[in-house]
Image (cartoon, rainbow, N blue to C red; front, side, top):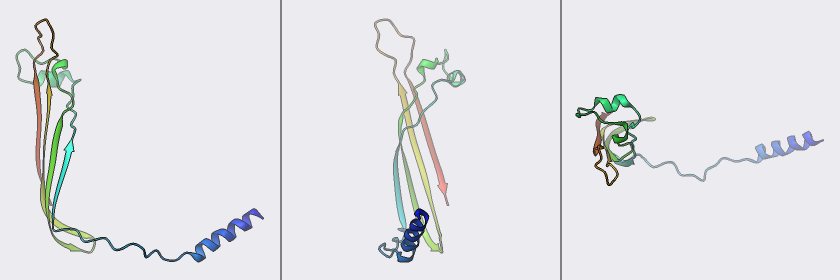
Length: 126
């Protein structure tokens, strides 16, 4: 008996359902787009090989590597035309990030040095 009631409710729900026409079609993609992002890059601070690869004399220690930093990413795109579900355009993207480590203040002279890490990237896109 329970299955019959469930079947009746399901059939009634399907039979009474209409088409959803409350939503408008999506607007067209603009011809020119600018995209901005903030980034939080994580520079490795646990690889001795990375510390040794720096051209410092004496080599850096693991505690001198900076870890995470702050950055920005920007993209600019120009769209030429849309054909069916395909939009064709060109653009580019650039990213800049920086991390800095400063040795802690102490009463004894510290052997730790301040270190800056930078990451810069630029890429064309089609």
